[in-house]
Image (tube, rainbow, N blue to C red):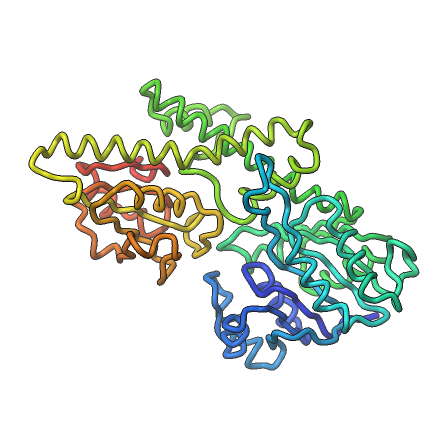
Amino acid sequence: MSFETVSVVGLGYIGLPTAVMFASRKKRVIGLDVNQHAVDTINRGEIHIVEPELDILVHAAVTEGFLRATTVAEAADAFLIAVPTPFKKDSGAIPEPDLSYIQAAATAIAPVLKRGDLVILESTSPVGATEQLAGWLAESRPDLSFPQSAGSNADVNVAHCPERVLPGHVVRELVENDRVIGGMSTKCSERAVELYKCFVKGECVVTNARTAEMAKLTENSCRDVEIAFANELSIICDKLDIDVWELIALANRHPRINILKPGPGVGGHCIAVDPWFIVSKTPDEARVIKTARAVNDAKPEWVVEKIKTLLTDCLLKNPTMHMHDVEIVLYGLAFKADIDDLRESPSVEIAKAVSEFHIGPIYAVEPNVTVLPKTLAKNVSLRDLSDINLNRGIHIILVDHKQFKTMEFKRSLVNAFVLDTRGLLK
């Protein structure tokens, strides 16, 4: 059975680019989202997120009539769910996954499901989430059969296919990267492969749903452990008065060593969240993964303490100054370079902490956003790089945006009070 109409549930950083990929292959795509602003923006042929090339593709897809957004679910041949899967706030020492968005998506699409449909969960999820999704759909539609009871003979096929793209390169990687396809039955996997092969040039590798879920969690947990090693190394080197950037460069000359760059912490909706999905399921066994999370979660606090020390040094060197005279400039709020995504960003956490102890001016230079989050809006001012006096105050480099990589910018900070968490000045 061919897929003429595809519904993408969740039009965020993954859902919208995925919807555009199908639309670019002349599929009729219905984007579903609860955010009316996002829906209206997309229907104008515009985008509400920052991602290279996406604006051109969305405009073309909407203009040509292949992409339309709505807040109400409509019938389709395939449904791709790409909604957030955060962890529950204040859920204890080990955060618990929050599957309420997936459940809401299931509730939304269940009434329009029909025999022969395919439902794919793209949201990064804890092991067992795809089966839970199928369970919610079965409860809402007892008139249809699902793979947990009917296997390959089910009326509706269900599979898991996690996204594995890099923000800033999503459009290219959606097409070129391999995809892991985890169907709840052989037929579920086959139909999911058929759908993705519409635009995916990489290999579609088939496994079961649980392994597909675990594959994405494993990828991000591995990355988290590697970053934790680099972050821990930076703290050790600071205590031993060793240049961590030089040390890593030397160590990486070994043919089998590739230490990552340290930073102010770990952010984003994947690496900062996904390892907890493994820990929550197997808390006694996931010891290294849990420790890595602790190391990376503690790094922003370490950065804040370094900022306090820098502020003290600045005041001691300028005895006529008072704390309210000292400007603190924070470069970058996104969780990684050259994107606008502030989710779980350690830089935002650091900015909030600075605003709680510093009574002087605090400026944030974040070229990819136009409005600060509410937690910062009261005490932090958003400024353009051109408005910053680089010859005074304290300068904290948190994100290595391309705007901060120019030689002019680096030279201007040579004699300033600087904390460079990304090694840009090296």
